[in-house]
Length: 366
Image 1 (tube, rainbow, N blue to C red):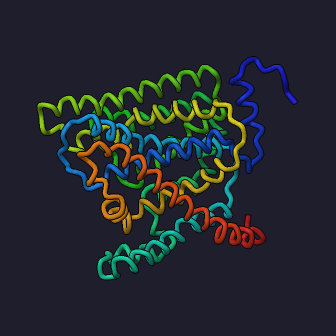
Image 2: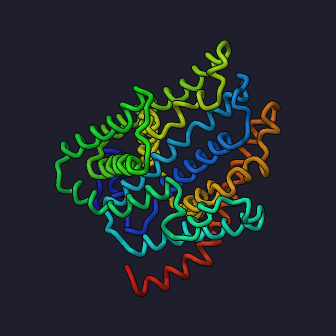
């Protein structure tokens, strides 16, 4: 075994490079958990039936800051994908595993919604979409599915071009899909553009895996801190302006910077957060890895359009606590409860459905 590393960073990278294809690093898995909590906090604030024009109070500002990490979390998930898939090959079994999750929860939640609300209360087009394997995917799952289909082509491209060329491609895509919309306040929109954005983040993760060094890690961490400062400052700035102008007290305006999926500062923060978490020394923790394996299911369950409004308005009822001292504690506890319940449900699905199914399919496909 190699010894005598020139730096702690080199030692960490050597360990990452010699992982088995099935190994999961607990520090990265912990990051997945944190990112999913950030996404849930955003959904609590977004769907919580709060007044669209809010007074500027300390608790409201804290809630806004807590809900500002959703797009950072999404970006981190895709960067992680690029970091690990760059060394892997396409596997039909993994695609089957993906659909065993998306289609299972699509059908189960449809049945739950029919039982709870009645079929006449559900949109017919959404019912039909939920009955077919390829259509019930929400925007993230759909974009991730396309990314998995094309990742072998991306890998072939990444391995065939030089480091400089790959860096230039990443720069051009980032400028077009992130920097320009951030500066001009526009949006590229659409699933097609989400695919290009996911490809960009995938290549960023792959670049870090292939060409990362201590200098790049330090630069990305600095960029992450700067991005986080800008995002937090945007919320504080709009709240300050809201003291005198009601326009800046409108929820969508206060979070206009942090909720945009095309915000370059969210991408900067995601890259810095990923590199920081990657370089943290953490022992293998089976429980962390087990919980992290449920994060995709957590996303599919709690953000399904059949139940999301019911979950946040009828079950959690955050609006009842909005003007009380319990606003922030209720937000945090609600997010923790949603995470725990959905994680438990997904864990049961993995044990009772996914594992037997994958064992059966594993004898026939790879």
